[in-house]
Image (cartoon, rainbow, N blue to C red; front, top):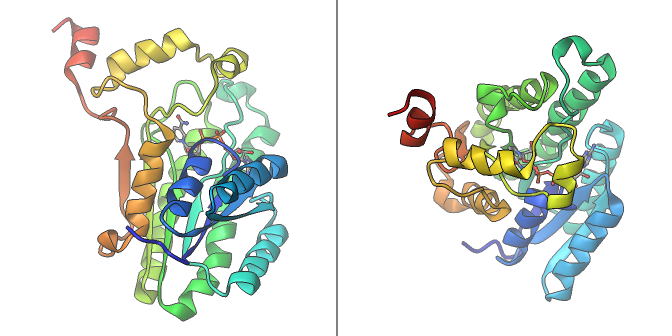
Length: 268
Ligand SMILES: NC(=O)c1ccc[n+]([C@@H]2O[C@H](COP(=O)([O-])OP(=O)(O)OC[C@H]3O[C@@H](n4cnc5c(N)ncnc54)[C@H](O)[C@@H]3O)[C@@H](O)[C@H]2O)c1
């Protein structure tokens, strides 16, 4: 898959799945536009990509700030004259609390970044793609948006379910203009360092991750950022040109009723 001279905007790209996605596009010839609220992290990713002789530039942008998003998209369009691909990946979780302890502030913030941020970028970029009658938008949701999550409170699954609905709405709107909009629901992807896991407020520990993989993931391994990045690249490629409004689980079979789950729950 060749993306020579294509311009790909990836949000939440200072680390994790977003960083990996920048590399996946840059290695295939694209210009990776590394967007993050963490400007230092975005600069690091872009300069590491450029150090390999590939193309990338960094933008410090809060996806929830519609004026900042519009200005950033205008700037990219002025500089490169095109935007071919948008990956809406930035997110925050808001941590875990039972609904009665979930603050209005947490709810508003998570919806603003995860859902409204995806709307903000999709709207601004769609305006640039429509006249060209081409483009690819890939939204990163989560298995939590389909099944809920016992460790993420209510705000995160709600925002991620919203992204699935937003994908469907955008897909129907934009397909007549030759723009494919699709969505990925990752399972558990290893984007954390072991030390971070200890600090998290979600209740996850390395032991729980190991047990989760044993019971919930038939493939018996944790997902890697590249597992998602490669699916994004596929959806952005000509090979996926007839896929529209689709939600693709990339979770090692986590949504299946598996032998391990049956054994764990029922003893057979
Ligand atoms: N890692 C997993 O197990 C997993 C599972 C399911 C879904 N996902 C989804 O995959 C995506 C990436 O996850 P990850 O684990 O790589 O995340 P991560 O925490 O490693 O990276 C998220 C990035 O988003 C950035 N960000 C946060 N708020 C922002 C804002 N307002 N504006 C711009 N950038 C902002 C952060 O600075 C960070 O660099 C998310 O949408 C997440 O919901 C991840």
